[in-house]
Amino acid sequence: MNSCIYNIKRGKDIQQADIKHLSAWKQWKIASSKLLKKVLNDVKELSSYLELWRHDIHSIEGKFGTGIQSYFVFLRFLVRLNFIIFILMFGFVTLPSILSKYGILNNSFAKIRLNNTESHCTVYIPSDNKGLVYFYTYLKDLLSGTGFLEVTSLFYGYYTVDTEWLDVLRYNLPLVYLLATFGYLALSLFWIIIGSVEGFKQNLVHDENQFQSYCNKVFAGWDFCITDLNAARLKHRSLQYELQTDLEEERLKRKIADRTMKEKLRIYSLRIVMNIIVIAILSGCFYSIYRATVFSQESSNLDNIDFQPNLIVQYLPSIVITLVNFIAPQIFSFLVRLEDYSPAFEIRLKLIRCVFMRLAGIGVLLFSLWSQISYCATDKCKACGYNYELYPCWESEVGQEMYKLMIFDFITIFAVTLFVDFPRKLLVTHWSCKPVQWCGLQEFGISDNVLDIIYGQTICWIGTFFSPLLPAIATIKYFIIFYIKKISLIHTCKPAARPVRASSSNFFFLLVLLIGLVFAFVPLGISIAHIPSSKACGPFRKFSTSWAVVPDTVLGLPTGLQQVLHGIASEAFAVPFFVVICLVMFYFIALARAHKRVVEQLREQLVMVRFDSLFCTPKVFFVVSVIRHAEE
Image (cartoon, rainbow, N blue to C red; front, side, top):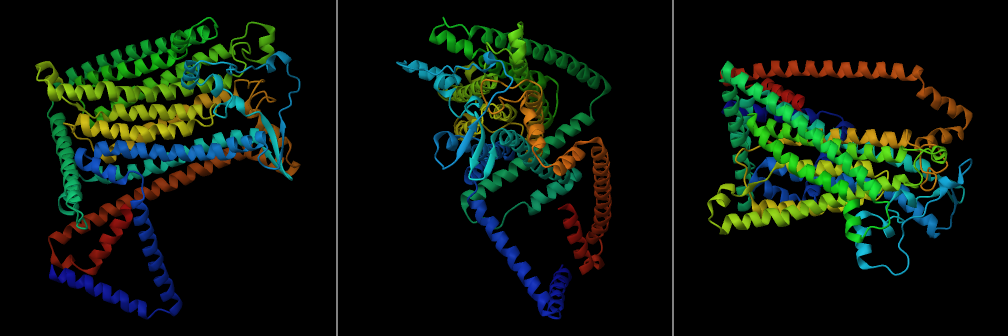
């Protein structure tokens, strides 16, 4: 041991001596590099103290483990993402429209002129309340997005400006509107992929060597920089939960390995039956959503409905979807326990089933709306391309549905916490009745809570095109939900009996969120490229579809640039580009495999250090540094 320490010091002295023999320029470069690295580390450390909810999340980690902590980290991630999307949409779409309409800046703008469009297609009378209005009417409008909210910048129909001029600068709002939509989708995809890659690397490090994971936690898991007693307790509890998770997973692996053939047949047969039941439940849920949407759209256009029935009819799809989202996961939770999976896989399977149910529920809702929007039985309707009588501005109608889903989802989360979780806590604490004590305090359901925010985020991605300010509502919603869930966790929940690992949870949460984003591409792509745009509202009034603004803009460019863009969009460019991308991908895959083999060989050499003191040389420390660099 002493010889190893001596060799380390000797290696440092040799390194310092080598630096002295370098030129002044190289010495300055090395000193500048060290100084820059130190400054960056100080800035990073300072920014960590300014991080949102840093202390709250560390406290949750110590009291309830890293699995539940990963949910709150995920919630913080969505708050940041929605805030950036809001800044993007507000800065490029909403703000220029407001400045143009109110003439705040010394600029001019041109409203959209309609050519070769039937006059009956351009009639749009928003349901704005005029004259004496009762208070409950404002409340209904606030909850449903109709009335005074329909004519605000919250919805698509507000943006009727075609071109803005600021001196000689031309601002094409329809093109910017479409590019901003592609921008927030690309930003979300990029951000999720970066987070997924980090989580994937953590999974690889953990799954590669279970014994190494134990050693890291036992011998190198403690942070000796901790001086505060409360921080030390939180760190101690965090390590305890991690070790409990490792031991629980090892116990289940041994249990699975010891199963007999008879037990395996019984479990597999039971799982097949459970999946058939799940498919039947999903079919019933989808049909209920479809019938509720059709009934709501047909009944909401009647004028002789009172306030309360009208509000219920308008919210009927949201109510049915919320009931389905509340009841079906409870059934799935009961069924998945019978299938005898590990805690981590149990959460993943339940999450996949519930995500499919919720995302497909949104898809059924949109399909029902599109079937009503596209239904045309007369020549006048066919001339417009959509049902102009019921949906003169169908984009705002879709935006209102997404707005109602967002609001009702928040109301449901708040109501369940206030009227279910807290009364259950009071009953269990102050009533000694056996059935109540048998129910006990609830555990914090990670999969259910993650599912709620992924569902809300998918609604936000879809609805932002139809309601540009919806990300602002989502940001406020998730900000409030953080404190609702934190209070509920601390005061009404107990620690999970079966702990869950944070590294696998973070990666899987982002993977499911990526599925939600890919799902959002489908309805947005259909709305932009397939369904005719409204001729009575919005920035795409003079185009056949929203996508038509792109070829129209290209035609206004110089001839040389047009040819370049047409060449990029042609098969002659796409096929070689795809081949090059595949070659680059295969190269990186081969490089990763080569690095993995090198790391395995270096580890085999490093094992010899424990058996022979002759290996305790500077070469070994070089091998250690290479391994660490390869793993990073």
